[in-house]
Image (tube, rainbow, N blue to C red; front, side):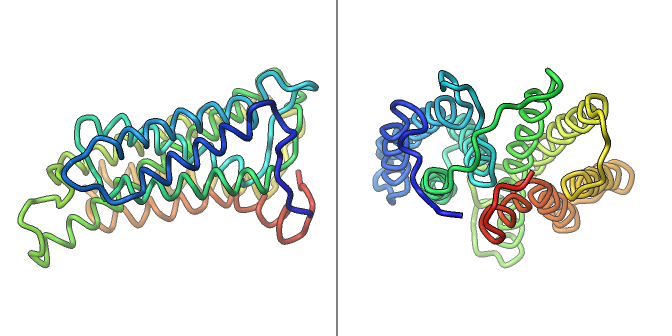
Length: 271
């Protein structure tokens, strides 16, 4: 596969990509004195990134119509969802350390999707196919947000055990609140993933046990076990977050990971 920029993909996409990358890069700079420009830059990056997703990856206004499919566009959309959640959440609880990490992820996602654009395809077949695809990607974003909060939870618990931080939680958020928020995202992601899988079963004319099906079902089973273990056995802390990390890794392998192998390693689009 030849890696090439997608400047001809959609009018204005180049400016949106440049604006998103520049805004994210500014948001990644270390802030001093509680200045407002870095959070504002992150908001600008999210807005530019959303425009890029609409005109280039979703293909709104493209002639002929089509949606970009591939591991980089899916990762770009997933990272945007996580950034959008964080941007809304940071209005209540500023998290500058997390902001800088996510801003760098935003730069990487935009640049990667620009230079590894994937295939432009029409989601043919069932009229429900676009909804199935959107639900699947939305579950990626929700579980991505859950993983972000789980990493914060693990870090906060570690800092509490080593007494390296004077404030419980270490991120400006009470530990129990952070834990509840983490599993709210897990529960929402599980519901959306379940809906995506059921819609796929209902609308698929010929069922195939391919890599996407197997990894998606394995991820669903891991998340179901996590929620059941938390409700019935009271799973908390690292035991619970390890299950979350495992399920999210399986979900990534279901689409983004397999597309990476097909597009980059093997050098063709895959299915």
